[in-house]
Image 1: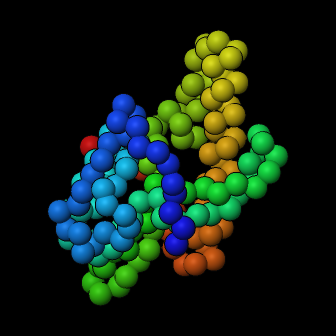
Image 2: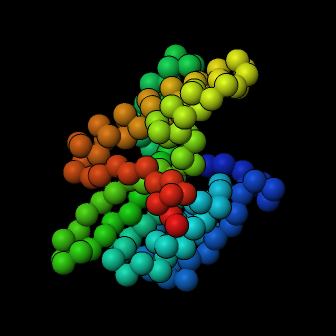
Length: 154
């Protein structure tokens, strides 16, 4: 697995050290980019059905429609569950609802400045390309792709 490399910025990122290190497959401390990712990491660390997990360890190539070139997408989490002795693998993306298809439709329906709408449209186009690549990747390797929002983490 390839690891996402980014510089830790204490004003933007959170560091997390799992209690159950034997379940975590990656570098510690984990650099998390949001409070939502921290909530999910805490859940992964404590959930008995999760036997292995990692953060930003899978690189999925995708076509970036804005930059017109290939890039790598590093989904937020990879988890392996064991339910009734059946292991399942998931690629997980953590996003606020406003950056998902449901949220984008709500944003477009509200009156916004032209620049804000343009930026949100670009972000959505890139996310859609990443998520389509993730779905193809998961189909190829018998995994499931899930987008988790703050609504799911309540």
